[in-house]
Length: 223
Ligand code: SF4
Image 1 (cartoon, rainbow, N blue to C red):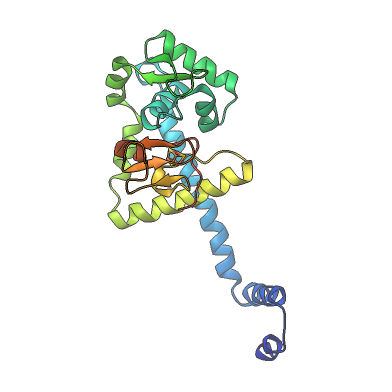
Image 2: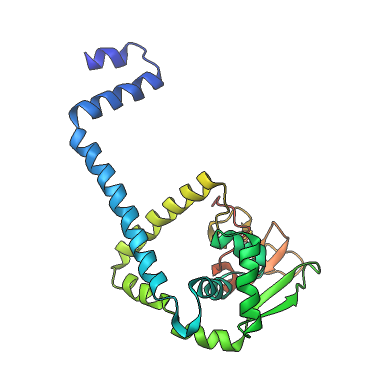
């Protein structure tokens, strides 16, 4: 009956519907199990986040301030602005400004006018904050992750990346990422003026190798 139905010119949409009917009828336990797994994964991600957040008051810095220091230590030169940090942190520009202002006042960040765009202000870490980052409570989470095998790390990274991509799409937010996976990235001596090995075609600028491993606000998935 099933074969007949499929081979009688049924359209793709009907096939999909058919598969769903068969799955729901014959594999209800599998469907239910998948729902439970999804919820368990989401709960584990939240628990890990809460544990890291709970350690956030080290050195009298709040969780938001630690997030900002980590952010400025891991992003490239195109992303060291208040608005990019607000995007990353999922807050308003006003809230992000307050966090950054307190870090500048306490000599954890410095403001400099951008070399590439004279209208914007670059924020960079000071020696004081670089030293402090060695005691970052986030390292506890890094340590926990290092207990995973190589293949488990790759699977978790790939899975979390997929979840992140889906959430930023649904919420209409930016997806921060790194050059090797970006549509604007070119390699192999692409920058004619300086023969740099890597370049960003969005801003038409050469990139150093280390920069290609930093997070970028302009990232566009595509490679
Ligand atoms: S190539 Fe993509 S990720 Fe790299 S700097 Fe350019 S926009 Fe950012």
